[in-house]
Length: 200
Image (cartoon, rainbow, N blue to C red; front, side, top):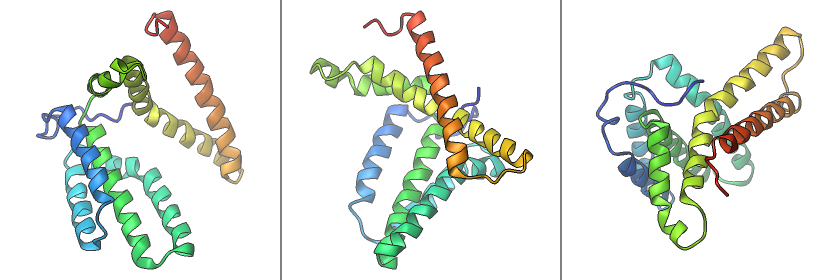
């Protein structure tokens, strides 16, 4: 299985996962408190520099961003129908910045570190009886872990359509993708239960 983590040694890899997650959360809040296009553009530029210093090759780095960039462009086109250009620019810059910093964090943090930190951060909620911290950590870890697998399945479905001379449409690719993903989810749940990870 593939992973979003880049196994290399950079200064970003050496930063504590907790610090990276807290900074990412704080940045997400601050980005939505500013309306300055210039400031947002500077944040995006810094995000680009950080992301391309994670140890990924240029082609692989761009390949990872492609699905999210397409989504952001779609949001921008829809927003142009209802909002003025400056408002759309602010929205696009915010989303782009979040995408770049989140991609940087996932590329420099192992899944095990993600699970451990999410579990620790969620422990106060467990004391209040709202949830089980270990379950939340496991859920977040699984989501991050299987994003590249889902993307690979989507590309495989697209290639199968093209090989058969079929036009690639959302309606014809989404259904098999959801079915395959749910099938994997059932298999993963069964494996988790078989190992006694979920006691309740």
